[in-house]
Structure formats: structure tokens, C-alpha cells
Length: 392
View (cartoon, rainbow, N blue to C red):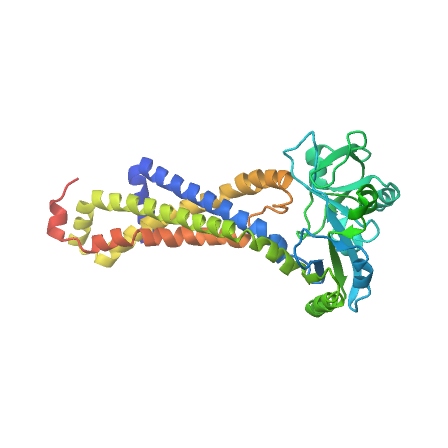
């Protein structure tokens, strides 16, 4: 019988305590994977953003609009092959006010030239373009809200007021699917012209932000600078950057939250290590006499230490593997699906990254070995005579 098998069998000496310890490791793994997946899912949009797409916004702040005529100037910039624009509508369904989804007024003719990851059937797209009050929605939010083609949807906006006798009413004319993780599947899009015609005159002909596709991704920085230079002498200046940088700068406002989640995930692993260490220390104390017998029979101190570390690592492996295995049905297919359907604008792609799962397993094995270092050291310091005299 090799050392690893013997170490693993030692775990069955007190099955109740071992079971609770392994359960603690499983819970720690689930919590770690859930928190790390929150961070990954929150930042994945920045990581997978296309390199050939850039965003132009008001230089002062993102919430301030730009004159719509800036769009034509940007289109004429060398290296730009397509430009579109959008306004944040801030709409919500009064019948389902807890449901959160993005609502955008977009340029009908150019939006899907820039966001090529959004796929809409040709006949639905043609119908949408012909209907001034038509809307296209993501497949996830459509399923969640029970929307079907031809359904009438009334939204209320915290930004754009509508009188009770003339609410913001739309007709679902298309449902898009996403072919990449760079866009979410819970956005509600409608005609910018419909919005522009109904707002007060002072607020007309404004674009919230501009989005452009460039011909050469390696020139994105130079093209961004060229766009901004065009408006340096204007009252309203611009700030342009590639979509990845733009998303990263937006996430920077939540950096404290992400850092706190990161720290909590590490603290959970430290607690797991302490639980394991306590269990192994109790086992060593209970088997002091047995270790004395082994020493008397000629087994080396290093061999005894290996038994102790092996026992802890075995518990860590069992708990780590079980935790990762349970994470996929519970976190990815359970919590993840709920977040994608209910909070798709923040978590459009909630999946456990393979690297995160491997990191969790590596931590489970490494920390279980670290947890056993002190008990293992104590075993090597045992005096044979004193150990043989001790009976638990």
C-alpha cells in the first residue's frame, strides 16, 4: 500500500468529521468560483470587445450628448468604414419594473453595420425599418418577458417624459441573437427618429454617443486622435477610444467593488485552509500513539510528515473536485442563467472560465498542503517514548 492510499484511508477514521471538513471545502470552492465568476463576467465585455470598434463621447462626461451632425464628420475620417449612434432611453416596463434591460434609441440604417455580432433575420429587419414605432430586442429579454413578434410594449422612461394619453408604445418587429460575447442579449432598440420627433425642440438632433468601425484595428488610436482633433475648436469637444478601453474606463468606476469581491474570495480560501488545518491537527493528536509505534518500527520522520500532508491534500482534492463539479449546475446553469435573464446588461455572459476552475483546484490542493505543515512539523518533533506512553 503506497503512502497516498494510506493517507487517504486515514480520512475514514472519523467519517463524520471528515465529511464536515470536505463539505467546508466544497462550500469554499463554490463561494470562490461564484465570486471570481462575477468578476470575470463583469469584465468580460472589455476583454472581448472588437479591436476595430471605437466609441466617441462628450469630452466632459458620458451622460452629456453630442450634436448629431458630428456623425457625418466622423464618417468622413480616413480609416472609418461605418459609424452609428445611440441615445440612452432609460426605459422600463411598468408591468415588470424589477426587470432590468438596456433601452436604446438607435440609427436604424447603420446600427447593424457597426454591431455585426447582432444577427436579425432579414425579413424582421426590413419590417422594423418600415415601422416608425418598431423595436428589436435581444432573444434573452424577449424570452424572459414573454415578448413575441407583433406584441405591443409600453415603456416609461426616467429621462424622456411622455403624457398619459401618448405613452412610449412600441411594436416588437425583430429579435436578435448574439454571435459573440461582446454584446449582451437583453437590449431593447428602437428608432432614434421616433425619439427625436417627440422630445422638446431644445433636446432634438442630439446623439448620446457615436460608435465607429475602422478598417485597420492597428490604427484605432490614431483614428481616435484624428476624430478628436476635428472638434478641438468646437464648443462641444469629444473623447474617442477603442471599445475595450472605453469599457475598461467604465468598469474603473466599480473598481472598489471588484477589489472587495476579489479580497473576499481570498479570505474564503484562507478560512478553508484553517478548517482543514484544524481537522488535520485533531487527527494527529488522536493518533500520537500510532505515530510513536511507527517511529519505533523504523519509519522516518519525513515519512510520517508525508502521511499527514497526504491526508490533508486528499481531503482538499476530494472537496475541490466536488466543489468544481457542483459549480457548473449550481452557479453556471443555475445562478448564471438567472443573472443573464434578469441582469443581462451587467452580466451578459455568466460562465465559469476554465482558468478559474483550474485555479480553484490548484488553490484547493496547495492550501490543503499548507494547512498540514504545522501538524506535520509537530509529528516530526515527537519523542518516541512519550508518544508510546500517550493513549487517547
